[in-house]
Image: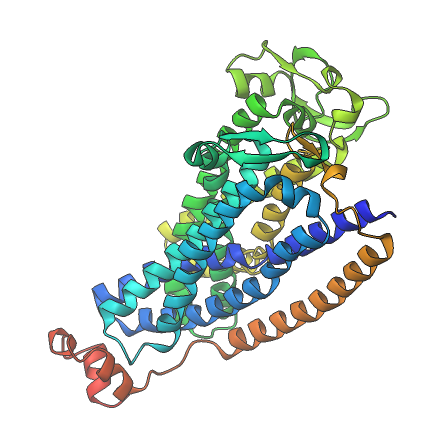
Length: 470
């Protein structure tokens, strides 16, 4: 393997590992706002327990995300210096905005959320929770802006020629709202909300199956189901609109999604199959004739540009893109099914009796993570051979002085280090889940935190428990 392939593997590995954590933070951030909002509205201690417990999980994922995210930016200078020079003016503004408007907002208010329960009033604490959730979303906004510019460049002009050329911003807002930003952002956010919802569903189902923290789990699983259903349906909608944008701006990628080779013919939609790139056909395929044309043009007879209309050196690796894309879609449909089943049995008031469904929720926590990773694989590999679509090829972005030995050593070290970090994350996450939410909240601390609203509570419930010292 040469330095180019090793650098691509290293960046793919570090980004994929990092992306385990931001979706959880983004998803849990929204859920925390809902839980604490319910607490302030109802004054029921169960919602305080829920918020405190999931804040701890959020803080763990946030810390892991920060630790693993820094490495990505370092690689722009070590492995991809030519690329960094080309896009520096574009990415500089986006990444600076991510640091100022997202990271500092999220990390600053997170301290209040984690440690401020007995130090600030309930209104300020809830405001801090909202700011943490907003900061996590802002972080996604600016990262997606930068990545979407790679997919569909806009608002720029080229300065210099050849190896010295670089892109400079001519319109900040055209750069931000390039053709693919909005659809990709909503799709990524809904995938993150799914990841957050399904970790809540998984842990809650685990407690219910073990007959532990039952009241906590029943309330949590309902909140998780609402978020999961809305996010999974939004994923379906934005997946379609995003594919339409791809058809307009990256036709080679769309053709690879469905292994559509014919240069000018109606396109089928495959449910599954295996791509034989040498023979330019899909083997063992199950397809819906003309369905891709219908989804893109609302007419099954309209031609869709195929891979044969592109030179071979301009085509992405078809089978990798095809398989990752279709696995992502299948998992997305399964998540919709699980969400609908959960809501249906909740409506029928039999949800907690369906142990088979609870077990499915326990193991389904991995599905949004896998789908998110597959989505990025299909998007990024589908952009190849371009590191910036239509402007810069991937080999041209590699650092000129990077050796194969250096790339191999750094990749090996990252694999070992991230392996240890992952084991630490699993250990800490399992410890927090096994410990569970607090059985009781210290009465004095609760009274201190809610002294302004205590007298408005009925003598039963939270107020009675506080006065009795429970």
